Amino acid sequence: MKRRTLVKMIPLTLVAPAVMTPGQLLAKEGTAENVAPPPPGSVTRRNLAAPKTEGLPDYAKKMVSSDMLGLGPDGKPDPNYKGEPDAIKDFDPSNPPHQMTLTPEEQDIMDGKHGEVLAKVMKTVVAHGNTFGADRLVKLGGAPHSSLYFGPPYMGSMIEVFTQCADAGLKSYAPYTVNPRPFDLYNVQTDPKEAAMVFEGYSLQAEVDYLHFRLGAQGLPTRSCACYLPEIGNKPEPGTYVAWAESSAVNYGNSVLGLRCNRNATGMELLCALLGKAPHFGLMTDEGRQAKWLIDVKTSGEPDWGTLGAAIGVKVTEDVPYIAGIDKYFDGGLNDDNMHKLKAMGSSTAANGAVGLYHVENITPDAIEKGRKLLVRDYQNYVVDDAELDRIRADYPNLWSDKNAKPNRVFIGCPHNTYHEIYSWGKSVTEMLKKAGQERVALPVHLFCATVVRDHLLDEHPVLVRDMKRAGMTFSNMCTVSFTGLAGYQEMEFAVTNSNKTRKYSSSRYFSDDILLEIMRTGEIPAST
Ligand code: F3S
Image (tube, helix red, strand yellow):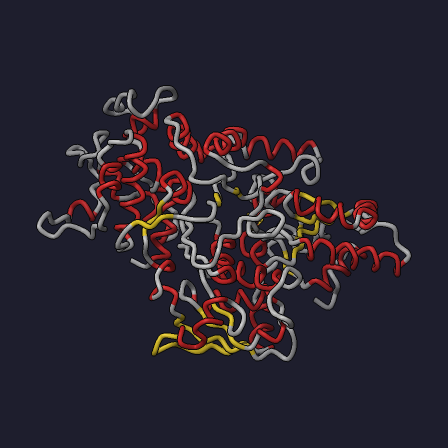
């Protein structure tokens, strides 16, 4: 099975059935140790036995069932289970599946010598690693980063699992950072109708936030998907093993910081954080970091980074690309003022494909150390020039429910903005307005960043921040895309963005920075686009 397919399945199948049995999940009170198994014929049993697949795309049909569905509340195959998955039906005891090597201490944890709940965490992490052929568990360093950040009703079972972990006294191995919250009632959803959408869509948000504090998360001011920014400081040393899940952070961490991290499913990163260990495979290994593609960028000038990332992501899907021809756009090397280019490109490779690691010739640490030796012998080649980027841009559909609507918001900052980005946007927007003799932008402009990043700008440039606010620009620490997924959003909102990740995951229309500036001034999509 392709790794990407498996990763897609994991969020639905991973935590709830694997760590906690159905009976334990049903229990609203009590610990994992004292809850009873569900009675036969309970709602949970009925749901598990009859997964519905009608109307789903092919890949999603596999997501409604997993090997775990054939297990009874005692963790053993359930003889009454009717929807027998293939893996159980075909199981050959004489040819057991891959099993990683565990140390005696790890085996003790598996055997419950450090408590039932930690044993379940260990079993789940080990089962996950065995699925991907991991050879062992490795100790994690730096700090964890969690992408379990939103609380819609369907996250209830996962919240229950981690509540049981918190009840058992488990904590992350280091204070960890978390993705941004999914809404901001002070700065974005200020209309009562929008606020109602938020409360209905994210009814379990308070539980998620409380849970993180119990498990060892940092406070809300550092909430961000760009946890590696200097103001937030979750930037482990090159070579450090981490188990993050946020795709843009994994992508940036592996590629630019030289971390060793797989593209984990949400939930798995937190289990690994509680254990302090993760299975060693894939992008954590030298072999897994070899590049299967040489990408030759031959554009006539600096490329649109989001579109370049989209081109690469679509082409290589989950493989590792080695990108040549863009080092000239990092004059003086990579620094806080130009890192946003790789943030935009990398997150787009991860959203349009499933890229967890890329190398940039002469720029990223693995490429600086090993150069083209990172390429596998039979690598493939992909040339990206102006025509290729134009071709990709021309394919982007207008997904607005009213194709001719006027834009009503500008979204900037997915992944979250750096200090340099919010400063640059503040300068260019206020200067543009001054030149045009205009006081305010024509529609709300939201700059998404961590609170500590916004405070940095406030400290350094208080007058600019004042002018930005007066001009109609707002700072928000929420996740852009979480808003776009709410019921009712499509009918009310017509956003434009310069984030290819937001474009990919929502109906927002994608424009380059200069077009966005024009839209901010006029409130109209230029006829030339
Ligand atoms: Fe960050 Fe949300 Fe985009 S977590 S990367 S703003 S989808």
